[in-house]
Length: 495
Image 1: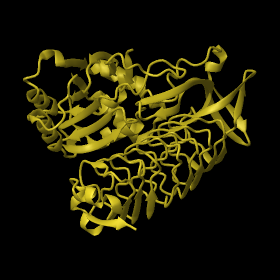
Image 2: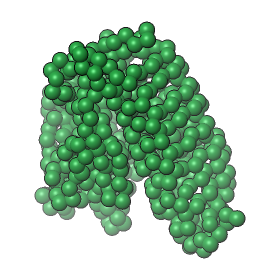
Image 3: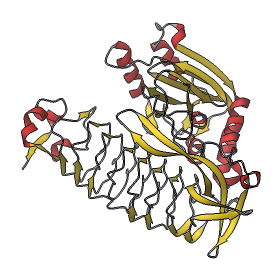
Image 4: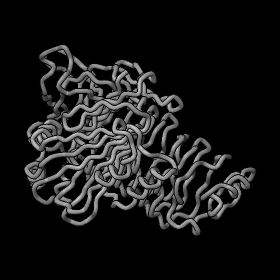
């Protein structure tokens, strides 16, 4: 079965501008020069074709002011994109694996995140306010069977290792177990960081996890395809009919996401470019042209930067999409109903005054950057149902104590820059702790590890290890003292 990964818009941020030095792509090809040609594909996309992809993915009519001008300026400068797709990315500690690690470390990491665990993405730069070499590096690895292309609950088959990539409306099919893609977009004039950031901020991220599979292919009822508005308790709310594929459950042991297909409506942002304000109550059902449908989704950017003071989300909503409540500065509390199964990328990012959050008891997936920058959030209870937490999900929050639910993996940067954090509790379920999950936590004093087997860690994962008391099970003390990285920590026994 062909796997389908939608990554077109993310590729727009890979930049290589007038650099007399070799680009990251050049260096990667040199690193892989001994590799047979059938392992690496090289594609060139013209600026015109790439711009069409940008227009398809960004709703410029909904963006106003300086950011729109910055995006338009960036689009005017596009020359072409060079894309390398490698079906056998170097891994491990052999010579090629070490060379790739060095190549990545030599770049300035401009931005990085994962998309549900099935793909890691790094934006790498040579630095400077005028970008000369900006690269996007997709690492798909051997978990490409996480998502299938059949709606309604079917799961991807393990019988095929083919991956279909859609890069700037340029289809690429590749087969392999450790796939990566390197993209350099060249411009005819230098590009600033502000232009890149404006594009990233307003880009619509597409992935197989996303609830709305295609907003132009809705229900079979022709009239219900239209965007419509209703007056609900004195507020004009906007909706659109959808046929959605919603994450229903996750089997982490089998690397599968299960979904179910649902017809309904989603609440969307006002179509005139304005923002919602005040107290908002979302109805459970809406009626349009005689058809009643449940509200099952909050659309991407629906409340982005809105001046809302509160929002009531009804039972029946299954998914909160990318950037749905991002930068809602006056939002102080939120209750996520128990029907919600997934909260997607940066849904509440930048809600600096958000103080209390009650998560759904059936939440399965919390994507990267979900609550990043919620500085006033001092506590949260993670439900046992939660299977996966994305990178930087709780970075720059105000926690003093944080306890993970029974997850298996603690992802990159998840609690980075939580400068008030003093105590962390890691449950026995955790088997791996990834890079920089606790970067820059100067107040950290105690970490309690409940696992009898030392979890895998790839680097020292907190700020000043000599100032942190790491408590481990007394019966496992010898194991921790003989395990790399753990043995260098200040270990004490849990009494």
